[in-house]
Image 1 (cartoon, rainbow, N blue to C red):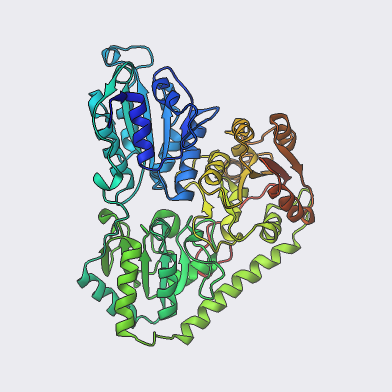
Image 2 (image 1 turned 180 degrees about the vertical axis):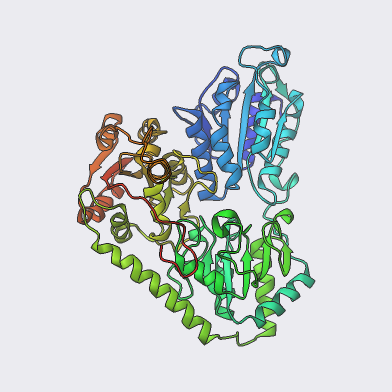
Amino acid sequence: MARMKAGRAVIEALRAEGVEYTFGVVGTTTNTIVTEMYGRNDIHFVDTRHEEGAAFMAYGYARASGKPAVCITTSGPGSINLLTGIALAYKGRAPVIVIAGDVPRDHIERDGSQAFDLVGLFKPVTCMARQVNMTERIPESLHDAFRMALSGKRGPVLLDIPRDLLEDQSIDGELLSPQNYRVVNGRSPGDPQAIQQAVTLLAQAQRPLLLAGGGVVDSEASAEAVALAELLDMALVPAYGHNDAVPNSHRLYIGTPGRRGSGETAEAIHRADVILALGTRLNQATTFWDYSVINPQTRIVQVNIDLQEIGRNYPVAVGIAGDAKAVAQQLLEALRQACPQGRPNAAWRAEIEKLAARRQTRLQAELTLTGDPMMPQRVYPELRKALPRDCMVTVDAGVAPGLSYDRLHFDVPRTFFNYSGHGGLGMGYCVGLGTKLGRPDRPAVSIQGDGGFLYTSQEINTAVRRGIPLVSIVLNNRCHGAEKYQQQRFFDKRYIGVDLVNPRFDRLAEVYGARGFYVTRPDEIADTVVAALAVDGPSVIEIPVAEYFPPAAPTPGGAK
């Protein structure tokens, strides 16, 4: 390439990777980078009102689009403010590249203004955290960053660039295409011997179950997961938080497991004699890390792209390290050779259908719930009437939004987004904005409680300025529900810090320039959501709901 300014070299390297959006707040150490986007239409800087919102939006963009996202922030607190959102990207395997403009090198380790060890701070929540030490190495460091973020188990990286390497500095060299410095679209297959062992076990199973994890979504293996289930009449269950990994309308689908899932699904898992854990870690949220859900006698075939995850939480009969899609294709080919006509299993299929029907009957009974304000369970059947099939739904942490795990319906991959085991309140709204930027062809909705919404509600301003048509649904129960339940049950109702006083959220939206809606009856919900989805810009729907204290986690045979 011709000689160019260091800041422009950063932007050209991002464009070589197809980056369309960068997220952040401007700062003196990064003006040399962000000003290079002035007047360009191929790459944009989304200036948020707080860096945490930028990280959450980048996460939503990356998860919805499957492409890398970039945050650009300034020294000290400007970059430190990203930490909560980057920790979410780390838990949620999202390729988010953080470019942190740092103080000049001669200010480091001298307690200079805004001088902090950003590499040390970010290292625990990134796949790579590195400080650039020479201007000439900026392109090379960016190549390393994308290589790490997009290889194997994806995740965020930090690239710390001291200010003096950017200002009044230029770079000579040639800008490379991604295929010149990393593997593009590579899928690692499983060991052939392990594949044959898995096929033998699956072909002999009497009550097989396919547990589809986040790796199925990441590798776009939903079709292969369904084909495997149909071949052997396997129960079809998504791992907790990955409801969109398999179509919920499929005849072999039961429901989602975990604390906010269904007892019927937990019963199916417990009944299974062989589990094909495809692209999942068998983590705490799905299994509780004990044998209350997974039967000690159940044999597990675990497939994961991260070798360290195999057998980490449960002993496996067969462990296969590899990409979920590549391994699923290998299993399909081998099973079709071993069982050309498939292996119908009428008895187990009847059990699956019975469990699925029991779950539907339980949810249908919630239509009789009454009260003023309405019970939060009454919101979800009305939402199901209104949400389009390809609608992207982001669910924040909290009790009322958490009811969606067992009650909403997903048939299309990359349409369900949540806190991915991170648990941070307030991610819902900003992640929803990011999903809409990542997939502008799909409608987008976020669901959050009143507590979580006020964490990042200032980003309504960002949504209005950018014209991002996200529909935000705020379930207002005027409390921190999980904590209030705990104080009620274990602390003699000594309530402190759990009861909230809120503004009218629909009016708050209007102050920012968005559309506001206020709904008090279940029969108003569907029409209001349809109207909000038609708005050319952001909107907020406030729904007052009653306090709801959930029962204990669903266990095999137990009611939710």
